[in-house]
Image (cartoon, rainbow, N blue to C red; front, side):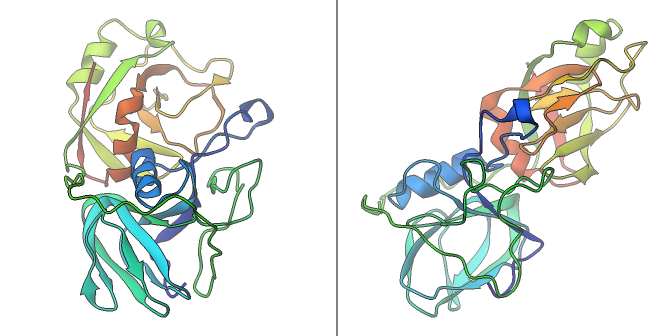
Length: 278
């Protein structure tokens, strides 16, 4: 590892089933990007890859390695030659991969044939940034082991090219505690307008805008949270929980992001407009 950029994490499809003991699922923030890379490279679904925030990532391949870049868009080069988004590429020994700043989306997924063979914790190689479970964030000088794959690499004639849009529309469903809030809160939540604040990471993303009325909802006995829960704290500004969310929370969950929209959360940058619709 020559330069991990702002943040480079090992991620797979997470560690389900441990919420009762305080460990959330975690896993790739853009699940579709990891799944696409794995399938193109002949890996089983959920094989670990790298989740790369922003630009600046630079790494040297020590052995011949097939790789694929999925998720957000941005300049990338292998020994100075441009690298196509999505399409698998074979890196020769000693080749250097460099990523420029994203031009669409915030995170890119680097998949490698065989997957990143980091040591599993509770059955997963994912880094949970809240609990600290899983491999440490990458640092300069790190060497990553790669596993084995037996299925062939796929070199498609066509692949999805559209990068994530800047203004994102998230489908949401009413949450279990919407009835504790003043009448009309749901319509005001949908009307917005909302923009992503600077308080945003894999744990949660706070929206900025006109605060919603909280009435007398106050705090509740702690209850379970899921990826995509939209909580309304006393500030009246909604918080959307990401994959590294706490397993419980005490503020009312007024909505939940639809599973099909969750991957879009990986590509929101501060200042982006966020549209919520049923």
